[in-house]
Amino acid sequence: MKNLKFLIAEDHDLYREGLLNLLKETFVGCTIIESGDFPTAYTLIEEHRDLSLLILDIQLPGTERLDGLKLLRYQFPLLPIVVISALEMGANVQNIMAAGANGFISKAVKKSQMQEGLQAVLMRGEMVAITNCSHTLPPFSPRHIETLDLLAEGLTNKGIANKLGISEITVRQYMSEIFNYLQVDNRTQAVIVAKKYGILID
Image 1 (tube, one colour):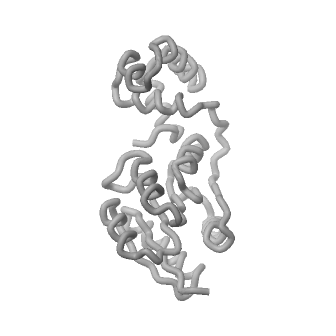
Image 2 (tube, helix red, strand yellow):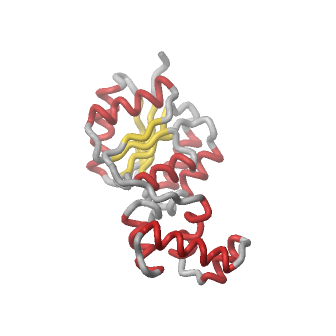
């Protein structure tokens, strides 16, 4: 087997050190490089085209929401990416996987679960999602998520309609469904609850 090379893109020093030790134990002899922000991580990926795996904190400084992950998947389509995050609600995991991650592993899972998840992606080419979350997902469509994103930006129904190229009637329908799914009564509550559940990422 070739020498494995990992990039840990995580801004919390203590957790990054923990990941480093876990990788050294799991993949003996591997090479590990580190980054604490997105611009540095991107540069390192460009410089190290032989990376075996990127371990990415989705809330890394220098990027917003899923923009960084989407950019990396577009620019480096063959690079295996595993997202490590405390945001483990199911809707959030679905969004992350849909944005191009090969795997999602909650920061709250056991060490052995994280090791198995990384091995599954790297050694067997599997897609994995490992969490401790038992929350039932609201049946959101991509349009619901887009509507929530624009709602969080403060757009009016008319603004959302113009942005998405749909009618205000359709926006009102989406809003009604969102309120119902999240069991809230207004726009502010919808954004707060969506962030709590990980449907929206700050």
